[in-house]
Amino acid sequence: MGGERTLLRQAARGVWILSPRRDISSWLARWFPKVPAKPVVAQKTPVKVELVAGKTYRWCVCGRSKKQPFCDGSHFFQRTGLSPLKFKAQETRMVALCSCKATQKPPYCDGTHRSEQVQKAELGSP
Ligand code: FES
Image (tube, rainbow, N blue to C red; front, side, top):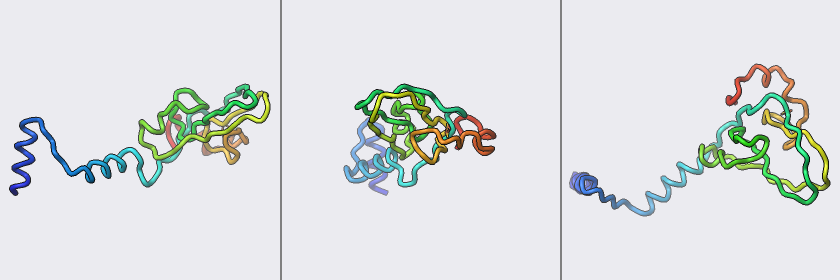
């Protein structure tokens, strides 16, 4: 009870003094969830891009990026617990990168976007 009063007094003054350990663990749980979110369908067709030999790319895994098929950091800011797939192009060539996020050969399109499950899904839903 006394602890609550102290907290209320501190809140009234605009001063918050909490245990540093509690702060860090709650912050980590909030920004790095233990159970990752499901990827969502960003688009129902692949995106053709020219990869440049030797260049490193970050393919969006979560489907929430506004720069499909590449990562824009949305996986972090939307607290998905997912990370982009980093890969290095071996040669300069045009490729079709998956945007439905259901491919079995990430980051490349394998035709899974033609499946009924992807075609019936709403954009932005798993
Ligand atoms: S766009 Fe995902 S498999 Fe083709």
